[in-house]
Length: 147
Length: 105
Image (cartoon, rainbow over the protein chains, first blue to last red):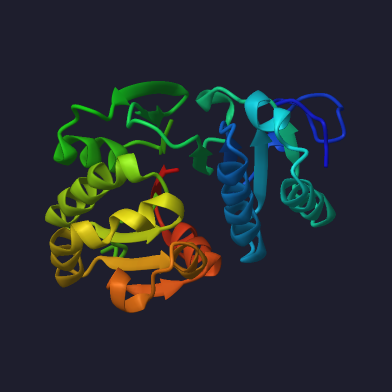
């Protein structure tokens, strides 16, 4: 398991696009060990099917990562060669082509959808969004993620 | 002529976001977008109460799949869930073939 921060290579060398290259980014912003375990279970499943997975373990998740199952999942990710970065990246720091799963704790639905359009990133609120307009925006964008 | 049809994957693990995800799935189908949904974690507990909406999506050719491990943890089975139970491999396959993924996780 690497200790690299987003933007760094897993071995801590210079930052670069290649360091962040992945098919699927799993960003764990949760604090609840159960949610962290679920996120890591998903990450392992995504990778075992062949996707290049990268995990970002946010500060809250890192604080509770002594849980035995979490430790084991992180170790497995490392053994399979999939980087685990520490910290939570800004959406625009993630690879443009990657699918993104951001895991949070259970709670109210207060999130946004981040749309990537070229080098630009814009956000749409999810709460009051018209579903048709949101779907149109998501499909027209170069990338999208619930944040 | 491109034969590719746009494909949206919706991963839902948060109960609070379940209704928003169902609304997006219906809106996507109205635009002739292929839709697949994978449910896991606490969101699975909200499935029985949304049976009508989920049946309508299934009738509209939305692929629905529920994590078997999450269902078992909630003491639910395929009959009470009302959709196919699958694994994280189904989740991964769905993400792999999607043009866009919205993960309510």
